[in-house]
Length: 437
Image 1 (cartoon, rainbow, N blue to C red):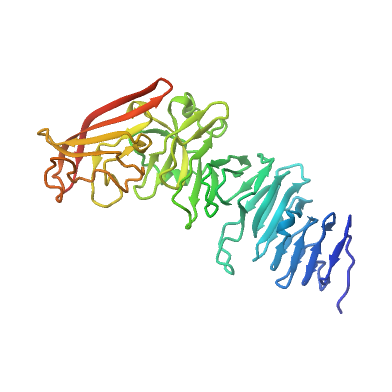
Image 2 (cartoon, rainbow, N blue to C red):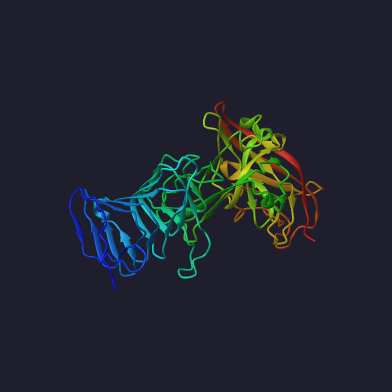
């Protein structure tokens, strides 16, 4: 026999309720129809709440969930009103579960725990946030394992184009993957093991772009398998790393990346002289080594920002670099070219040369004959065009259809560098080894 139960609903305004709220065996708040929360209305649920696959919930007021919350239907708000707030409360020592196969479309959302210790929310659902997320207290643990029904991750928090957040701290942030959609600058409120360690991306201006980020602390296994580094890199921060990946449908515009350091989690040996030698490095999957992405240091905020848009995505961390390897403007020259298609030194790499387009690159053989000459070298900064791959090029160059033989060559690089002292031309010449066999 089906029993009816009464629920305490605090009404500050007007509530339209057309759904069935019923009880079968265990107490549960079940919405299987249309549930509309009007403005200036507060609905509180202390029982597990389920919005079924027939449920249609529009929240333009305020909802408080004090127990497990499940969404299998439509859960949204009236977009033109920009209203609706949902608060998830944790009232005991157990993590509050938020789950479901359908996305929660939210405007304002709060996470609040009344527990004195560090507390958690177990997120096994997708939350799309259009307004603001307020980290009052409580760490949101995102379950990134695949949902066998939806074929995407069980949990995800997505900040849409205009979404923001506030009050992130060691006591309240997101642990796991976070997504940002849109072209605005954004700081990911991510952390691990009770530590907030955000990462910031610059604006691209393209609303179709999306990025995902995650932070890991003290993952020793990861660094044991990611040890190889480019010659310019001195010491790598092996305590922490950030993962940043871009969406499949992103435009060609790339981001600048900002990381920070903290004395408790960044090795002291890395930050003895950060303004001089602290950079951001990235694990290059193709080359299977850490590469330098450059860095401009802000001592007041303890942040490092890449001097140019990143050349790739994946794993990032901080590292010190050998400044005696670098030219003015953070140019780095790699003097080995092995154009065999393995993705490693397939062309003459001059890192950051694209930041100084008024440049000239020349290559000479051991008899002093110029075999390569170009201007505005590697204009895109990714090796896709106008780079030396072992073929002759330029005025009076020898046969340009055949690769040059292996051996030692000599390069001459000239570029215009501007700083607070004005503009000047910088010239660098040294050996270049070419291996084409």
